[in-house]
Amino acid sequence: MIYRSRILADLDASSDAELRSREDYIEALPPYVLLADADPRHAARLGSVLDHGAALNMHTILLGPAASVPPCRVAADGTVVATDDNSAADGEAEILPPGTRLATLASADLADILDLLRRASFQPDDLGPGDDTEPDPQPADQPTPAAAIADLATPPGDQPAPVRLTVLGEVTLATAGGPITSNVRSDSYALLALLAAHPRGRSLQEIAADLYPGTDPKLALNRVRTAITSLRRVLRNATGQDGGTFILFESDRYRIDPHALDVDLWRFVVAIDRANHADDDPTCLAALREAADHYGGDFAAGQDRVWITDYATTYRHQFLGVLGRIAELTELDAPDQAIAALERALEHDPINEELYQRIMRIHGRRGHLDAVRRTLRLCEDRLSTIGDAEPSEETRRVAARQLHPPAKPSLSGRRR
Image 1 (cartoon, rainbow, N blue to C red):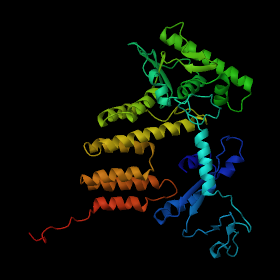
Image 2 (spheres, rainbow, N blue to C red; image 1 turned 90 degrees about the vertical axis):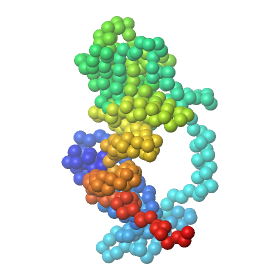
Image 3 (cartoon, rainbow, N blue to C red; image 1 turned 45 degrees about the horizontal axis):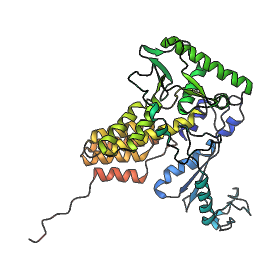
Image 4 (cartoon, helix red, strand yellow; image 1 turned 180 degrees about the vertical axis):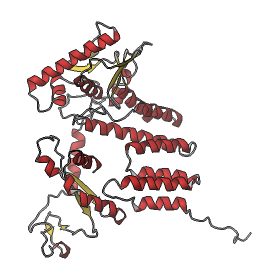
């Protein structure tokens, strides 16, 4: 809702339907369906979605009775059975037209479909999400993406890679002598971000489709070749390596030379993999902190390209998971560190009530009641930015338990 509301505000539009009728906006917002229990604890937030969702092309289905929402009952065959509450009032339209029938799927059929998908699934060979190309057959012991690039994180020998590539945050290039800024094309930055997310490379046609959707294929291919040629020339001048390739071409794919470019995204993912396979908490915590240090911001921040959004979302979720695990491992012995990790997570996920709840519990155990109140107020302020939503009842109960803990039972009445 925040993302879509900002788009409308930036373009001075009142609804997604209005955007679709304009010629200056090419990213239509796809329909989004929220399927949720009609839990009265979340009535205020669900009401906000119901009130504002239509303009954002967001639609809500509540399971169970909800106040002020006309119900419909669906029979096993998908027929919508009319109820008294579903009848239209004077001057109002029907909630669903007579004879409406919904598509249904029996549990046994669903189990069969899930089993089929499981047996047909494959292990992706890239870090990036959303690759729609058909994969080549892979052996059964195909390594995980992190394991597949573990050797790429640090070039062999003591000599570091001459160029550092940052894609977590704004895409930048640097050498030991400082940042590389002169003569770098915007297309080259986008190319580097794409190849960083696909360490095993992409074909020329795949790169062109990713970077220049809707462009004439021949023109798009020429633009990719120009971006690669220009980038190699810039890096050769910056490093003094006249024979450096930097972008390899192998097996009909272009990929980053791991001996020439040190990529922060690869180090981030490999550190998470080390944490997942750590044998003890200190080793796991060290790897998690290393991963957090490599995350400098949203993937390819500032690049105005639609395809980047999916990648940014994926890596942001991984980063939030890292901070959550750091907080879990430090909560008892180093609560200040746990709070710092959770507060850093809030910077990237400011309306996640679970984070506020965890912070308030830690403050409550330490007797920092003012900090509990500040955290609850911060939660209220940030939720109010999405249609005047309010903290859930669960969040308020967590705050109340910290501010007014139950009295411990007295032992004075026991007989000795």
